[in-house]
Length: 441
Image (cartoon, rainbow, N blue to C red; front, side):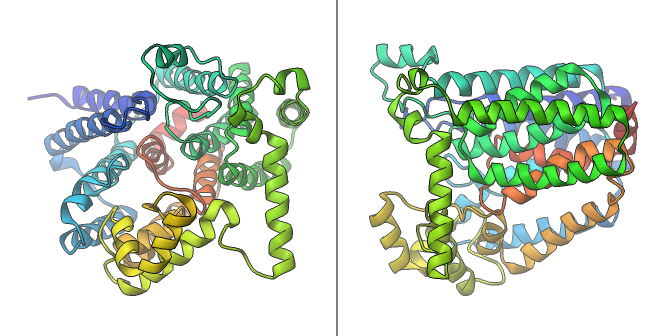
């Protein structure tokens, strides 16, 4: 029989693969015959199987508190929704290249549980974190400035690509942005608490890429999470804490000003996509949308890259299947069947179809039912309430800030398999007393 120490090591290493390797696995999205996220999906399922086996071997010691039971209720509702799904196979395996069906959520929940009870802190965690973040950010920066080496290989094999599309290994700038919102806030908190220069450097690098991603939802998540960071600084103000906060502030201001007023000799050399997605253009678009909303007294369908249009369609789909939803990851079918005219109009206007609500909370309600959303919100609320001492406990503060950033940006963004496992692990780690004691040491 495998001893307990070895079981815990297997669990730890498996989670390392989930949070450090999975975000890096990506096939070129231009290869239409092969889904770009297939490597992420396969790896997640393999890791989930390993975690499940380990938990089975540890079955006699498994424990479930009220928060875990709430999550179990959410999972049961998801299973029932899958059974009565509009497309049961799609609900099990997920939409093509999204892969957020029942199997994937099972891996999320296993990651959460193992993170809560068995994940332990060691020095490799910092090393692998920095390596993964540096790789993803550097790739994103090279993409934005159109000097990514892989582009030369694309040219050789005549593979089309969009120069300047800074999505790194996530396939979409919005997905990359949700990842960065957690990373920037987490490493800001780490630097303020632990004063290691490497944390400050990673904060600068990830903030630089957060701006370049041009993901407004991530910006909002970062901004609101930063407010909690400011509160922490005020409550725990010392000369050292204020000094570190000033280091972060000065660096971020310099980066923001540089990207806002980049010399023309650099911007003129950027690919067309990078020029159209410049910080000035992005801020101008946000200003115009807000001005039109104020003048009209309501949000237009095009507001937020058609998010309002998608939300309105999704609400109609929720009204048709309020109890169990249409089944996990079946929103595309639900919109076509339950909001047909709007869905067709969306396709005509945008030349694409909506398979995600661009709001994780509406997504849950539409695909798993309103009761499932209520239970999910109860689950998250319990975790937040349990850790309300975030301003007095350093490790809680470090873990809570990225959770807040994710929860906020999720109101405008979607869950994706390259990012969501990190969020679910954080939900577990913030309840892991031994991990938090090691983190704050």
